[in-house]
Length: 189
Picture 1 (cartoon, rainbow, N blue to C red):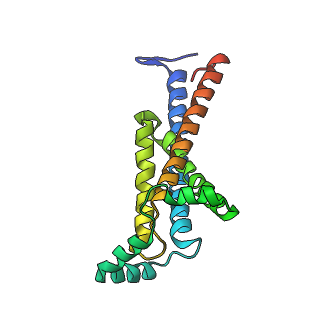
Picture 2 (picture 1 turned 90 degrees about the horizontal axis):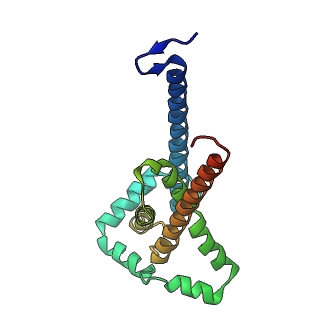
Picture 3 (picture 1 turned 180 degrees about the vertical axis):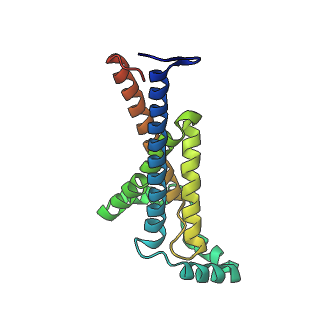
């Protein structure tokens, strides 16, 4: 026997509460995976899978801030000309260059996918996804120059941001496909 309440029957309310709990749990899982991904990204790009040594970072930062000219020199030694390394890599096309270019794109694709999932209710645009990908890549490239643990490369910004955008587009296309598939099977979205 159904009990009627002011806003609907008990079964409907319990079903909606179960769906909200499930949605909240799924969001928590996605956010936890995102944190793990960002941790792995920083660990890979900045520490090449080595241990994250905060003492080392403090020493490097202290050294860089003590002599700002070192940062300028590191930036000058890096690549500040857009598409310079990409063009060189395409012309040379060694296996190392190919892996580096594909890797710089692929490593940021999950970031775009996470953006698609985590910001799906915010209606983020392609420009927004590209900008967020560019921002994260800029943080990582700048950290390499600041902590003297790599070189700043503007082409990495381009490739990383492109990877984030590709991941975001893939997420949106898959979501659209899933929504269409569920609608054609008569299930609500």
